[in-house]
Length: 163
Image (cartoon, rainbow, N blue to C red; front, side, top):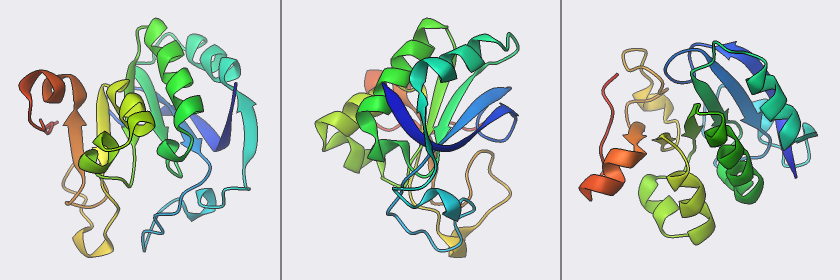
C-alpha cells in the first residue's frame, strides 16, 4: 500500500516526545490560516511512497522513540495511515498523529476512529492563529489538545497530556 506524502524528517524532536520519524501526509482541506505546512494542502501534490519504505526508514534508526504522522492531515488517507500505524506498532515504536479534526469528530466516523485508536497520542484541532502559542509542547495553538489515547479509552473521558 502507498501513502501520498509531502516528505519525511528522519530525526524530529518537535513533533512529539523523543526522537521521531515525522511523515508529512499530503492533502488537507482544513485551510487553517497561518498553517506552517501549506505546501501539504494540495491533494494532488507530493508523491507516493510505499509504506514498507517508511517502515525501513524507521527500522534503520535504533534511536527512534516513535513515528509522527502529520501533514497535511493523515486522516484524509485513513486506510493507508492505519496500515502504516499497524506496522509501526510491530516495531514497538509509539505513534503520534496530528489532525485538524477534533477528537469528537474522529469518533463519529468508523474509518477515522479506527486510525485514531491506533495511535498513542492524537494532537487534535485546527491551528487557530489567534491562539498561537509557544508555551505548550507539540501544539501550535492553545485550542489544540495532545490526547493520550489509551487513557482516554480506559477512562471513558478525554485525557489530555501535560508534557
